[in-house]
Structure formats: C-alpha cells, structure tokens
Length: 347
Image 1 (cartoon, rainbow, N blue to C red):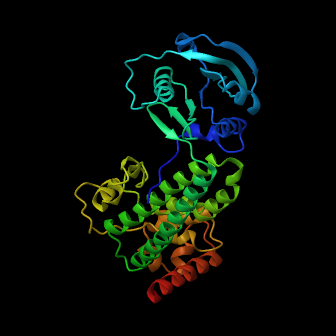
Image 2: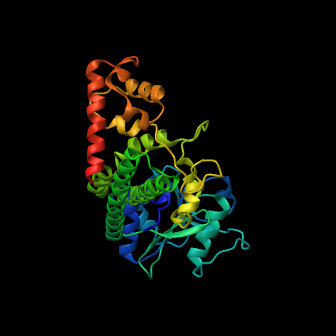
Image 3: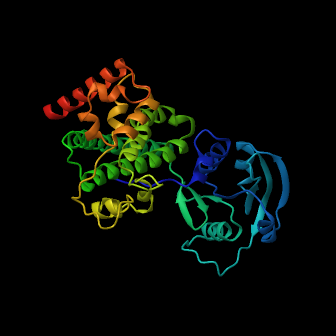
C-alpha cells in the first residue's frame, strides 16, 4: 500500500505555522490569493505594479492584503511580507495543465523562477502548492490524520510480515538451508517498510505540532529496523563487495519491488546465482541476539569461524581460543546458539 510522499515544501504549510494560519484565514474569508514563497532576481524580472510592504509577517496582514488583486510576495524565510498586489507575467509558452487564471500563473511562475507558489481558491476553499513541475493540494488537518492512520496501519501489517520472514530466516539458518530467494523476501519486506515509514514521516511532519503522537507511534514501529537490517546485510554481503546488499533496492520503483527476481538481482550477488542457490550467513545477527557478548568479540568470532554453521559446531574450547573470549563468554555463546536452535526446531 502506498499513499504517496508529500513534497518537502508542504512542511512549511503545516498546521500551527503562522503561514498556514494566514492561509486558513483567507480560506475562511472566501477571497482567494496567490502567494509567492520567496523572491529572487528572476521573480523581480517578471513582476510589475503592486507596492512594497516589507513588514513582519503575521496572519492578519496577509489576510487583509489578500483582499486586493495581484500576488503577495514573502521573504524566502517567510518572516516578512515583501510586496503585495504584484502583477506577475511569466512566459506564456511555459506548459500548464491548469485552467484557472490564478492557478495557471502560479504554475508558470513556479516553473520559471524556481520558487514555490501557493494559491487559495475562493470557489473551492482549497490551498494548492506549486513547486517545480506539479501541483499539490495541501491536505486539511483531518485529511492528514486519515493518511497518517492509513500509513501506520500499513506499516504495522508489513512489519508483522517482516518479523515472520525474519523468524523463517532464522529457522533456515539453523538448518543451513538459506537461498537467495529467502534473502530477497526479507530484503523486500525491509524496503517496503522503510518506504512506508518515509511516507508516514512526510505526512506527520506536515501535521506540525499535531503530529507528535503519531511520530511516537511511528518510532515505536520502526526504530529497531536499522540495526536489524544492518546485521542481516553484514551476514549476507557478497564476497569482495563494498556495498551492502540492500543498497540496490533504492533503484527499484514500487511496482518493481514486488518482483522477487528483480529484488534478488539488486542485492549485488553474481548474475549466475539463481533464486534457489544456497547462501550462508556469517552469524552477525544471531550472535547479536545473545546477551552480554561484546560487539568486538562478536566480530572476531565471525572472522575466526567464517560462518554461522561453523559457530554452531564450535566447542567451548574452540571459542575460548579466540582473542577476548573468556570461559563465561564461551558458555554464553554456546547456550545462546543452542537456545536459538531449539526455538527454531520447535517452530
């Protein structure tokens, strides 16, 4: 499920910000407006008429200035109203899909001068953002709440499937039966969850102060993903490869991400490796799940034994021979690995 990430510029229009307060007042007054969010020489070159204001920004002032025809120009940091009643004359040959005069002007100005432009529709009571090549209707607070709720629900469902995939991967690791297909399914779930989390973050940020609770919920859902993902990648990074195996997934679009063959091909393994080819973990993730084993010791154990299968077969004496491994740590590792194997066999 993908709801769509909001443009970064919409963050500046989040509920509770002075600018959004002013725009909401214009909506309530049914007067409409065209507001340019910054200024540069290119904008000045297509601006005529109007008058210089140059006063600190506040919601009441922009509401009153919106009653006049023409554009309102703000400073780039949105702290001042630079000018009002400005006539903008962008190039007429700039393509636009808009039909209304205000929206056509806003889209062309945004494309020509590279500054975001906001319009308020007097007839539709909507706020629209033109930034770069497209138009984005600025969601109302209730719409943002709905979108965040949908995205968090999607993350929760996908996170459950990711956890199940990781449990299955553990069972396969215990039996030394992991294939490229199995790793690809886990990688796919990580990437899907990360993309949904990015979408949720953009919507929560657009909520302003109202998004605090949702931000805590999102953090609770995904905060532990990065270390787990890193451990899986360290376990399966191809020999002699510098990049982590999940890095290539960023190049796939949402549709391609559901093609397990494309996912597998994006993980950096040799092209002659087919989906059912066996691959073997080094043991980073399973060792990290064992309490009271220092990270440096875990790294040396992986380096010494080379793989999880060899770690399972190692005796306490073998483990103690590794630098930094005491009798207590060796016992902890042996017991931890035995518990992992028992749990996987019971499952």
